[in-house]
Amino acid sequence: MRINTLLPVALAAATAQAQQTAWGQCGGTGWTGAKTCISGYTCTFSNPYYSQCLPGAPGTTTSKVATSTKATSTLSTLKTSTSTKASTTSGGSTSSPTGLGWKWLGVDESGAEFGNTAIPGVWGKDFTFPADASLSTLMGQGFNIFRVPFLMERMAVGSLTASLDPAYLANYTATINYITGKGGWAIVDPHNFGRYNGNIITDTAGFQTFWANLASTFKSNSKAIFDTNNEYHDMDQTLVLNLNQAAINGIRGVGATSQYIFAEGNSYSGAWTWETVNDNLKALTDPSNLLVYEMHQYLDSDGSGTNATCVSSTIGVDRITSATAWLQTNNKVGIIGEFAGGANSVCLSAVTGMLSYMKANSNVWSGALWWGGGPWWGTYIFGFEPPSSTGYNYYDSTLITYKP
Ligand SMILES: *[C@@H]1O[C@H](CO)[C@@H](O)[C@H](O)[C@H]1NC(C)=O
Ligand SMILES: *[C@@H]1O[C@H](CO)[C@@H](O)[C@H](O)[C@H]1NC(C)=O
Image (spheres, helix red, strand yellow):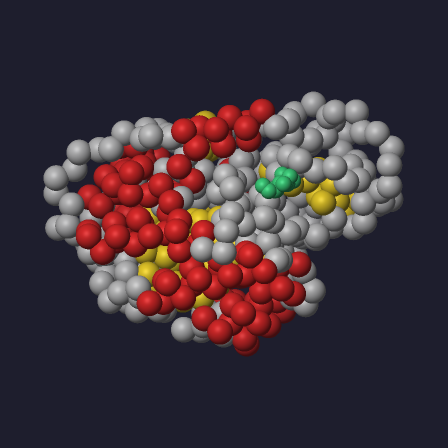
């Protein structure tokens, strides 16, 4: 989802109206519902599209209501993005595992990346971790892969090359180990959009060190998967290539050689623009030959994943057709690391059409993950937390028919 971290913004005057309940949405682009929370909860900025009533008294100064400025500019950038097509001539020599087949079906599991304007923030107030019970329920149904976002600023506090924060890492590792201990696959996802402290990461050596530090923690866990970064966007295209390669080098360099690595692309890693924007990423090399290209795809009009209305019942297939051709042409393997649609029949058709098409092309598509689960989504349109959130209610019985 088009989460952007970054700037706490001065609070707009909150007008008194009905108060939102615990965990409910209380702000975000286009939000017209209650903007204040019941007693004991505070409306907390999560991203430009979503603020939420989280436990705790109001913060002293850090009210967190996003302006829509950032979102608008990134969305319009996306829509008009033409991209510089890097002229890579060596594509094809390396390095994706071919023939994985339809291997994975799963869910993104939010929590540790929440409260991104509060660094490091307070556990239980600004951020949390996925609930083991929910993971267990989903695994029992056949979901076998979970992507677990976290914030680099909380993991490596102060700088990219800082040693990892023991407490945050311990809690995060507990979630990863819970998943893999039960036989699932867990995607380690720095949910940072190619940014650190709000600035585009240009220090590829520092980024390599960050990944070396992180990967060494998981190097004996072959069911951990390393996702280089969530949704690079509005970045130099060669920089995106170099950051991905630095991550791969950092991971393999510390002896984490048995794990899959998921590389993401520019323009929010969108499948619909992948072929034109991210063609240069075919030059990535992985000595372990376990590289998978992770793309995201939403089905609303601007592809941002912020509207429950899907463009058409075939928009899922339409939006991943060119990426499918790119994977086939370049002998690569891909996964859809985020997708979702609203709880309505048009989106249901679009989602099932896309998943069926992916399974039919499982020589290049290895799986898909719904965005998203996690204990704090409240009334979010795509919420996938058992037993009763919106997306889970509407889609669970359908999605599990696509389990590997
Ligand atoms: C880790 O989780 C424990 C609860 O299990 C909590 O008390 C602690 O504050 C958490 N710390 C961080 C940094 O997440
Ligand atoms: C969602 O998209 C529909 C159709 O394009 C539009 O009518 C509606 O206003 C949008 N809702 C929001 C909150 O943007």
